[in-house]
Amino acid sequence: MPDDVEGIKVTKQGRRDQSTLAIDERVDSWGRPYYWLGFGRKLSNPPKDVDLWAIYNGYISVTPLSMDLTADELMEPLDKALTS
Image (cartoon, rainbow, N blue to C red; front, side):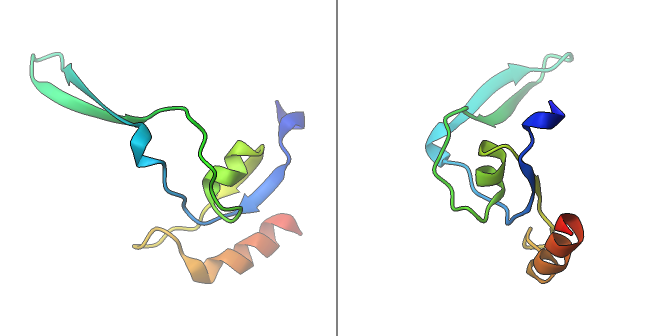
């Protein structure tokens, strides 16, 4: 619900707890096997500047991405644009 959203946070990309990784072997409609990778729903304890913390705490997380997956140079301008 919109009223449940705390606000918007410009964040860095977080990392899931690798111990919750699940690998599920499946078969596609042509009978070929494939593997589905996913993480369990266990909440971790991420730092406050990452997307996982924002989502866990009711915020919309916006992460500017680049080849290293966080466009650090866009963090401050994007934060100003979204929170003004």
